[in-house]
Image (cartoon, rainbow, N blue to C red; front, side):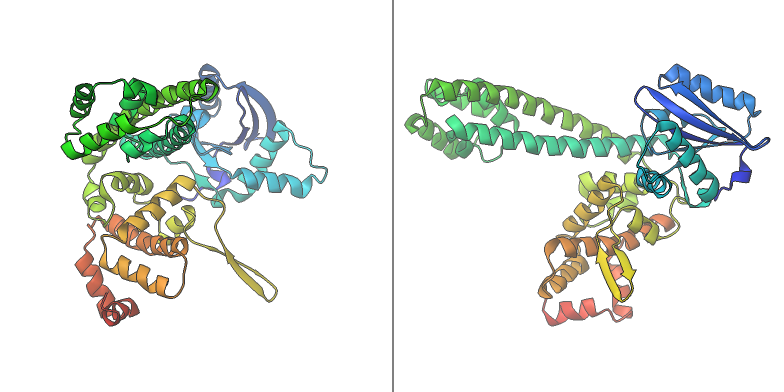
Length: 422
């Protein structure tokens, strides 16, 4: 990826963004003049400002720094070819400000000036926002939103479970899986034990059959337990509020599951048409959920990463070593993209079930007394190196070839697997 210098641009600009307005600090190279302006956050104002820059500098490149990596402002500026966007970590700006403003005073124009100074002095060290292809950018947002919706589903099922225990705990035994359509529909139709006990047997059987729950023995057991069940409480002060909450939460959960299915369909559609899908389909444990996430994590631009170490650090998988005097300690990497770290760690966890060497590594480290999370993070560290090589060379992963490579290098991992009859 190209490394820029201030001399490559007609002007250097820093934006301290806000919800309704953006403070802009602009340095013109020709006359070394710095000006402060304020623009509205409305799309029209941003477009007018960007077009005015193009006219002012005759289409020459302009460097714009901001504390954002994504969001409305970045999306609005990405479409202008004469603007090169640089991202600055907000914590960097905060620490820079504290270093020279001991009073702790903070102001938007001042922050814009600080960002401009960082851009001017440290441009080669800053990351340039380079948009990937449309399909990758769309896939990246879809898989991240889906992951959040799945977490919302977990939260909702936990809330429903907690609420049902207050007045209607029986249904939790009748349906082991809570994030299902049959569970939601059952609660919406019979939100209390009193109501379901009034239902006829054939009505209940029809309900189960309509939801493809055609296990006769299971259904008979459910119906028998329904007829024999005794209420936890008849106190309306307890039952009525909890019943109403369950109805609301069940309706939300049902709609949420429909939404996740829509996301799955859209993700599958984009993923199956991507030319690199064969790489990610070959990864052990990736599957239909993780493979698109890994594709979005790596992207299509082969120049984005020059080494696996860059990915390990960016994803927060690589640990941080600190030294002071005779002391040295290693800790978790705090500044990283959380979703990206989740992607690699969750995939590493899945790979233990499908990869021989990954399972052997897990067992080896567990035998040394290492905790589960530590092992999985270390495994993710190793997988990133493998994935980077496959991605960089457009080669599908081959477990047998990797095992042969480990064997040729005399890997102690294979020796452990043989000795422990793994």
